[in-house]
Image 1 (cartoon, rainbow, N blue to C red):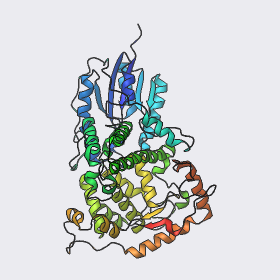
Image 2: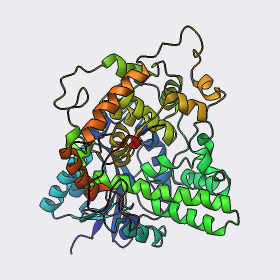
Image 3: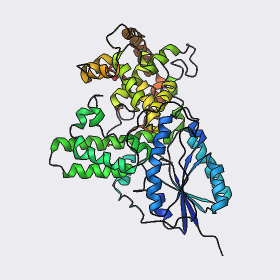
Image 4: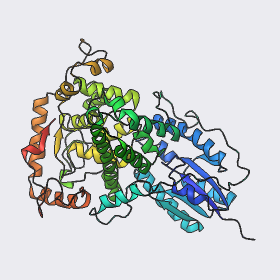
Length: 492
C-alpha cells in the first residue's frame, strides 16, 4: 500500500488562518502538519533584533492553538531549513511542501534556493502562492498596477474547517529568548497575533481613520491616527487583501466625504507598500548596492570612496544625540518602542544621508533592527530613495527645524523623549547644517546632470518606476531620461 500523501505547511511571514492558500491546499491532503522555523541565519543576521523574535513568539501561541483546534499540529523548530525538512521527511514521509512566496533579505533568498534544490533531489513537490501584490519573475512594470488590483479584488480564502493532521504530534513548549541565546532588554510589544490584527483594523476603520491624512505626518497624532497595522502586515497576521477589501467596504459605506478621502489615501498606501517590495523582488542586489551605480563611491563606506567613515557621527545618530532635537527625539522613540511614523522615518534617513553624509547601508541595518515592522523590500528601497541613490526620485532633504515647527510646534513631543533638551546636558549640533547641505546639493545635483547618470536613470525608471496611470512616469518627458533641476532638491 502506498504511503498517504503528506503535506507540510511552512509558515514564514504569514502567521494566520484566514486568506491563507497553503492552509486551504493542505485541507485536501490525507495527512498534514505545519512548521515554523526559527533559523540561525535569521537570528545571526544584522537585521534581526530580539524584539522581532519576541513578537514572532507572541504570534505563535494563538496560531498554534487555533490550528490545533482544527486538527493541524504546528511544530516549532530551531535550525536551518534543509536539515529540519530532511528530518521531517524521514519521520513523516513528506510528499508536498506548501508555502507562500517571500520577498526577503539575502539570507532568505539563499535559503529558498537551497530548499528548492533539496525538494528536487528528494522528490518533494514545493507549491508556492503569492500573498501580496508582488509578482515573481515580472517582465515589465507596465500593467503591474492592474495585476495588483486583480489580486486585491479576488475573494479572500476562508479558513478551512479542519485538517487531517498527522497523529501523535504533541505540542512542545515554545522556546524563550534565553533558549535562543538572545539577551538584552526587549521593549514592550504591541498586541500580536491574528485576532489582534483584526481588532486593530477594526478600530482604525471604525474610528481612528478619521483625519488620517492630516494625522499621519506628526509623531504626536500618528501614534493613534495611523493604522498601526505595519507589524501585522510584516508578520502576516492579516493579509494585504483582507486589509484592502475591508478598507474599500468602509470607504463605500461611509456618508462622510472627508473620511472617504482618508480611506482612499490609506488604500493607496497599500499599493505603494507592494510597489516598493516589488523593487527588491526584481533586483535583490539593492539590499547592499546602489540602484544607480553612477552614485557609487560618493559617501564613506561605499565602494570606491576613499574618505574615512565617521563613526562618531554614526553613533551620535544611532543614540539620538546629534544636537538636532527633532532627530534625536524620533530616534529615542524608535529605540524605545520599535515604531515611528513614516515622515519621521524619512527625516532620520535624510539626516544620516545629507547632513552626516553617511552611506545608507550601516544606518539601514541599524534601523532594520529597531523597526518591529521591518519589511526588507520597503526598507531598502526607502533607504536608497531617501538617501538620493535611486537616480530617479526627487531629492528630499528634510529640515529638522521645519519638521519640528510644523509637527511639534509646542515642543510636547521633544520634551517627552528628550529629558535633557534645553539643559546644559543636551549636546551641541554635530554638524553645521548650511555647510553640509551645500556640499550634498553640489555633489548630487552635479552628478545627476552628467550624461552617464541620466542614461542610467532612464533604465532604472523603466525597470522600477511606477506605472499607475497612462501618463509618463514622474520626472520624465516622453522618450527621455529624467532631467534633475534645483526644484528637485527640496528642503522639507
